[in-house]
Length: 400
Image (cartoon, rainbow, N blue to C red):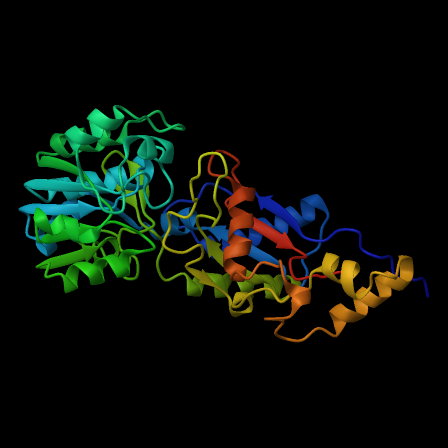
C-alpha cells in the first residue's frame, strides 16, 4: 500500500460564481448547484466540514425583502407621532443610512439630528481627535451647535467619499419637507432638551441608549429595529432587526436584512449531503467584523455578521498556539521530533483551552464572525460576482 501524501495546504477560501439572483428564485438549489459546478470545473472535491456561505444581499433579494421610503415614513409617523423627532447617533453612510433618513424625515415635521463626535459608531470621522484636542473640546460632556461646530472645525469631508455628511444630512431632511436642527453630543440624555420622541439609530449600543433615555423620562424611544419589524402596506420587514442591516436599493427603496434564513441554510446543507454524501456547514453572512487601519472604520454596520447558520458553526475556536509550544514546551526539539511533539499536543488538547497559556494569542471570537469576515473579504462588495463562498480546511489543524 502506498503511503498517503501529506497535505500541504490549510484553509482555502473560494468565491463561487452564481447567476444573478432575482425575487422568487429557488436560492437553495442555485447555491448548491453553483458549488457543485465549481467543484467539477475546477477539479476540487467537497469535504466534510467545508463551509458554504451565502451573502445576505442575495438572500434578501430572493425573498423580495424591500420597502420604500414612504413605508418607513408611515411606520415612523405611527410610532413616534409625526411631530418633532430626535434622531440620534446615526452612522455616516449614503448607502446604509441616508436612504433611511429620507423616510424618517418624511414621517416628521421637524428632525433634531444629534450626531456623535468626533466619529460615528463605526469610526467615520466628523473631525479628528487632533482637531478636538486643539479646540479644547471635551466630547464626553460638551454639546456643540451647528454654528459652534463650523466655527471650530469648518468643513470636514469624509476621506473616502468626499462627502460633508453634516451638510448632506441637513439638506436631505429639508428636501423631504421637514425642518432640521443639528447638534453634536455623545450623551443620550442631551436629546431630551429638545424633544421626548426619539429614534436612536446606533447599532451595537442601541439597547443601552434606549434604556438610558427611557429611565430619563422620554415619552417614546424607538430603535432602528423597531421600525419595519412588521409589514407596512405589504412592504418587506424584519421581525428581529427592522431597519438594521438595510441598505439602499434605489433612490426611494431599501433592501432589508434577510429574515427566516435558518430553513435556507438547512436546505442547502441537505441538498449538498444528498449530492456528495458530505456534511457541510452553511451560513448566511453580511458585513465582516474587522477594522480598517487607515480609515479607522469598523466594517460591521450590520447588527450581526451572520443571521443564520447550521449548528456546526456554533462556538469559538479551540486552538493551541504553535509558536508558543515551539518556543516554550519544546524549545530544545527540532525537525521530526519537534513535529511529533507538537502533533501529539494537538491531538491530546482539552476540549476547552480557556486559561491555558498555550492558547494565548489565539482569537477568542465566534466562528461565524471569523468565517463571515473571511467570506466578506473574499466576495468583496463590488463586481466580483461571487455571492457564495466555499471555505475548505477551516477546521483542520497541523495534524490533518
